[in-house]
Image 1 (cartoon, rainbow, N blue to C red):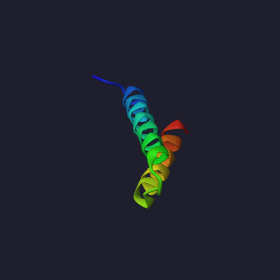
Image 2: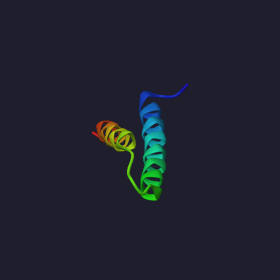
Image 3: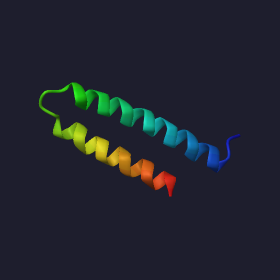
Image 4: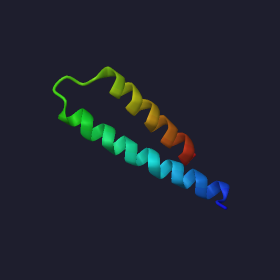
Length: 52
């Protein structure tokens, strides 16, 4: 069974992977999709919250 610390670490790692994928997607778009920008902002905030 995972401890709470391990769960938070896993969630943060998964969110960082998602953020990297979002950045790659945004960098390949000529016109940035506003929904992806919002999602990137929210994922970044979630990572910051887990880091506190």
